[in-house]
Length: 209
Image 1 (tube, one colour):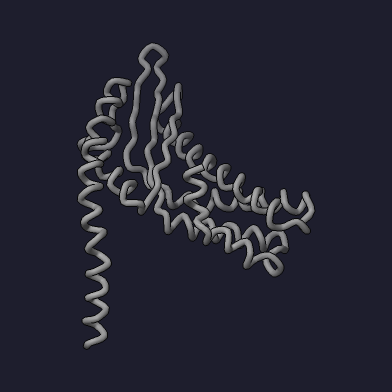
Image 2: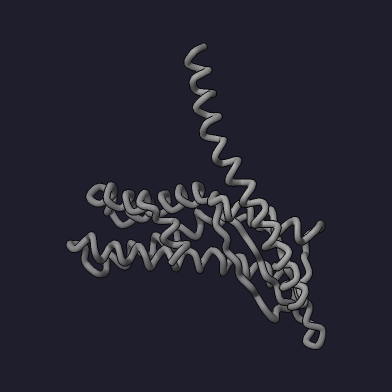
């Protein structure tokens, strides 16, 4: 019983600063949401989902400011349908994130794995990029979708605003890099070193580069 009470006490202490921080996040998110709504309206965008755009943006930004998730935005313009534009924007979100990650992994291979030949290194990096796209696909959460109808051309512009959870992304990158190492027969020799890259704040490096 004492052990349970001790654990509860520790948990409450851990929650307290987070709650205080979240109030600051909420205030900032609401302020920025108002600006974002005005900008969207000025550009002729409307929210596709049902509900209030300002509220959606505020909820989205709270998670970004709290540091639990990162934002990825992509726009597909001049498409014949909203669904087509949404699909293209979503694919671009995953591909662009994977490309950024690929660049960092390639740099680490070059600097940390001098005995790997160029063909093996390129195959490993390419396999990682392909696998991380597949891994991350289910982690992309759409916060809201902005749509603009170009009446003269009868086409649509779609701006997709998404979140990816940091912890989930960390695990997905780890899965992808381990599988890539296994595919290229590098897991036994380099597995520990490669996994360490992900543990060194890799996801935030990708997001912030």
